[in-house]
Length: 172
Image (cartoon, rainbow, N blue to C red):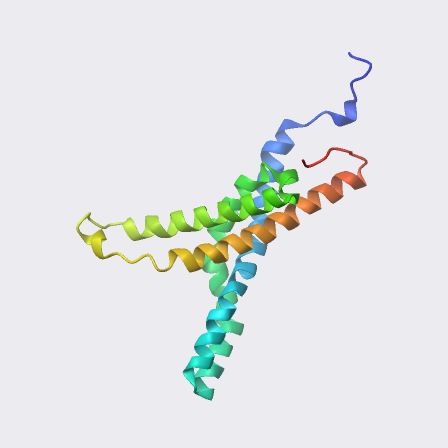
């Protein structure tokens, strides 16, 4: 063996292929949906103000506190897990701004793809002429923000962990 080869620096391919993507899927699935749901807060505030009814404003407030967190997991857990699995392959790159934006863009694309595929399910080309895509942009923006924040946290955890173990590899 080469005397300059560092045995500790040898990369375990199984760990990269299995561990980081699986950890990414789990991390994104539990972190990204509630972070993305926070993006719905301005919408609910505007609706509450426009309602001009204390009862309706209270109902929207109760909805925001109780149903939205559950709804965010119901709607966002699968797209977040898919995004996290893919982003897990690039874990150390997620700590950079390009990686953060890339994770967000991936989240947007995954969420938009799932929404559009659900719209097309069971539809004929004639039925699609009237299909409305209003949900793609707001939910895609929520997915973008949730995935970007989760990606940044997931990536910085990897960098911090590698520094703690004495690794000097740069994410750039």
